[in-house]
Image 1 (cartoon, helix red, strand yellow):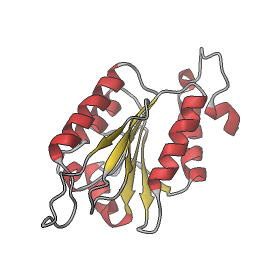
Image 2 (spheres, helix red, strand yellow; image 1 turned 90 degrees about the vertical axis):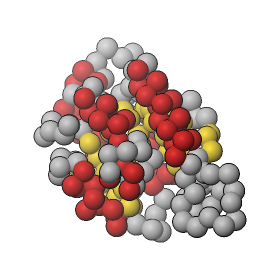
Image 3 (cartoon, rainbow, N blue to C red; image 1 turned 30 degrees about the horizontal axis):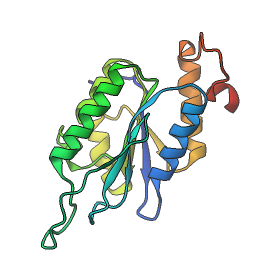
Amino acid sequence: MFDAQCDLAALVYEPHQDPDAILRGFAADLKACGFRAVGMVQAGQCADSSLSAVLLPGGEKLLLAQDFDPAATGCRLDLARLQRAGERVAEAMADGADLVIINRFGKRERDGKGLAHLIERALNADIPVVIAVASDRFADWIRYADGMSVRLACDRQALDGWWRNVCLRTPGNAAGRNHQTVCAVLK
């Protein structure tokens, strides 16, 4: 599934960092420059009923939390809702994508479930992927990706630098567009 030519990046974050704000801003800037980023960015927290995701490129917010159960502990992710959101992302990818953004690498993705199929699908279609990975899950990520990914600091500068390199390696990524690309702006 993974090879040395894939454009796969892990935005590695610490508990005090907010990868979601970085990914949302990045996706908005790509959209403003005419790129089509598809995927989802987490909103809310896993441990309460606010867990949701913003679908890209449209910006629709989907609830991912289970219906509130006061007896529930830990992550309240509703797997059926996650699966439906993943189906929506796959449909958006089928309409064309310059980048796929995956909100989190968690235990489901580690086990090849969750949104793992979207990562594989994007890479098989030569679409770059960026995914938020908690620092305490990075070892799992490396095993999952067979070591074939770029580790990015959880900041916009690192993400922009990675995207600039992706654009430089794939000149057709910006060819034929009648607008100024993120790559051109960052040069």
